Image (tube, rainbow, N blue to C red):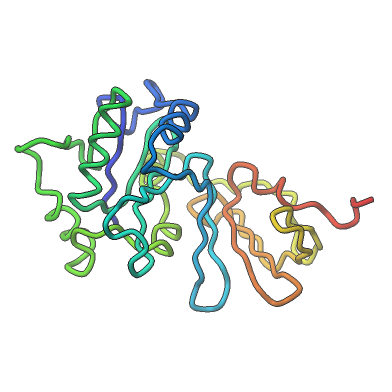
Length: 231
């Protein structure tokens, strides 16, 4: 598992929704920080030629990061569930997180409840290195892995929750839709309502052979318009 660091106002990041950093606050902060850029979505090519896409209204990138763009490396900050999450930050990214937290009246907290900066907290490099191996120690995780891994907060809740339920969806195998981002027609080739730890996953194939997989969260379904409903 990867190591995540959280900007939160709560005593524990798992309770961030009780004292949230609202999406509106986060978007306003990103807009006012010239080093942050709101992307709201990220894509990464997979080995089989398909594309993995992650969408989040609060997904931003720290463009002033010294490792920005190297080997696909990006310092992603993702707002969700009342807090901001960064996976496998190095010391440079951690410094930026502390700056952002101070501006938001929040704290920086690791997965196990340790706070930064804190001389008594476990070393950040050791944390990341122990969890990801020497190759990942002190680096921001590559985009495909960032998108492919389930959210740690969801993991924690699922461990205490009832068995997974299937995510209902109107998208059906073999049906034709128009993907509203780009306007291209496509065909649903796979629907797994239990994938991604119960969030669900849909895979579509465009007419030129490209494939796109999306988690069934947020407004994913609304991005597909049935072709037989077009006028």
